[in-house]
Length: 249
Image 1 (tube, rainbow, N blue to C red):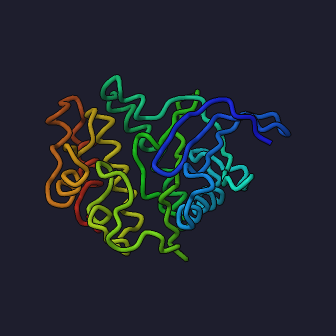
Image 2 (image 1 turned 120 degrees about the vertical axis):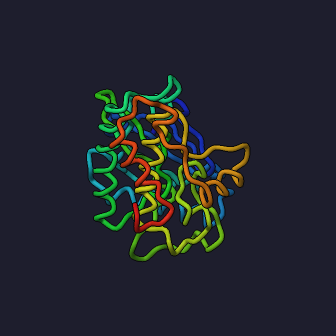
């Protein structure tokens, strides 16, 4: 039922195509497991966890899931196609004006709060996973690491690092799976806001391990030191989200 138009993105586990759903004559984004028929059981289960987590979320700030299925051993799901770029694409031109950054993150925070109220934590929020539609509204996608507060799959065992180091909280960087709750997404929202107003994530280094060491043990450079135009109140909110202790975020 799908005609592939072009490849949009490729990640660690999946590849996303722009496609046309023939029966409904609509453009969709079609995600497939990268390994295809060679995908192991855990990869397949995690793929379906992403689809199930997002399929139960009906919010204008979250990219909707349309269909989940399998064709000739290839697991796929189709979702809304967002005609626009991601926040990471927007950042290639440099930091955003602080007010614009704050307004974007406010909308994303509303979508994430909606997910939290329905028992779903994203766990991999970052500029690349926030798409801008043609009206400039942010849409959250890629629930590939989503965790359900009830009935978690247990696929990410303790000590296994999942996520993107520059945007993950200390409890996630430390592999403490049981400690990763809604506050992890709050941290990632703060890290994304930090990137939008400074042009770089709170922590960056040559290797992922070096970044995680910084995330766990160092404090971020205050945004106003990198961009003096950031209002002090916005800097306070940003750094509050980036607190090491979950209870302080």
